[in-house]
Length: 104
Image 1: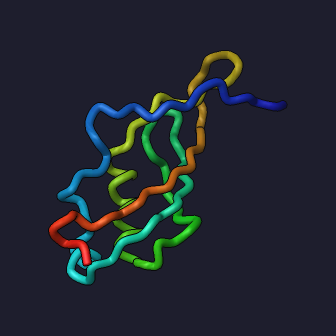
Image 2: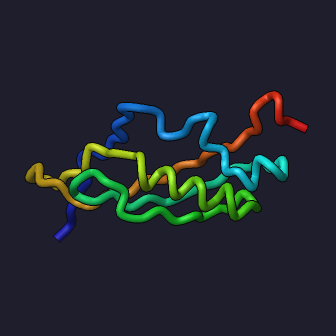
């Protein structure tokens, strides 16, 4: 049986990332980078898992990305052809840039 995903939509009631979320270790060390992640979304629209597929080169940025996505992201769940919620997937890149006053 082939199941097609009709929709998977990130619901942003509030921003997932804010200026205050910059990982402390990366901030102290002046690190920036882009983290690419795969996300498994449960039928309830919550993040079931987050996996780094392309590292920023900084463990604190990589881990911080998945921690925040897991805690804060909410999705409208994917649905099968009958309209029933099913597990879905998302893929995104997050670019961490130091606040202006902290830039090198």
